[in-house]
Length: 151
Image (cartoon, rainbow, N blue to C red):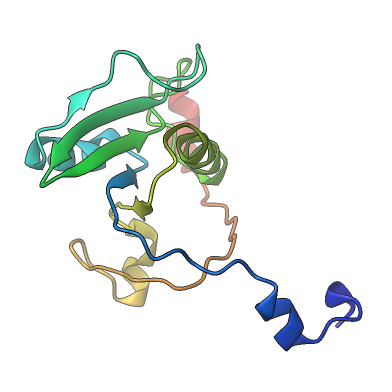
């Protein structure tokens, strides 16, 4: 295990910070598209934050509110200023998620969406996935020629 140097796997695991047992009070929900955001915004009666904690000039949108003593922030990357379409994709998602973590210090992060790319694997809208690990998977989805010609 060259990546661990001289440490055994047990030593490396022991060196990991232990999770804190504290109540969850600050939740950040990250979605990719406005159509995914609005049902959640409406359900929890969230309002758009006019004093965004994000850098000036980014299209990122934050909705906030309180539900049963939980502070909820819903974040979506906004629309591309040039094309006017939702800013979806791994880079946009990573940037807005990192910025939300830094600015809001959440106790819990929920990534919500339609998971449309997993329909072939048997996933459906409304399915819930609980994950214990995370991996970066940057896949490319071909854009149909008709869309490219439209641009």
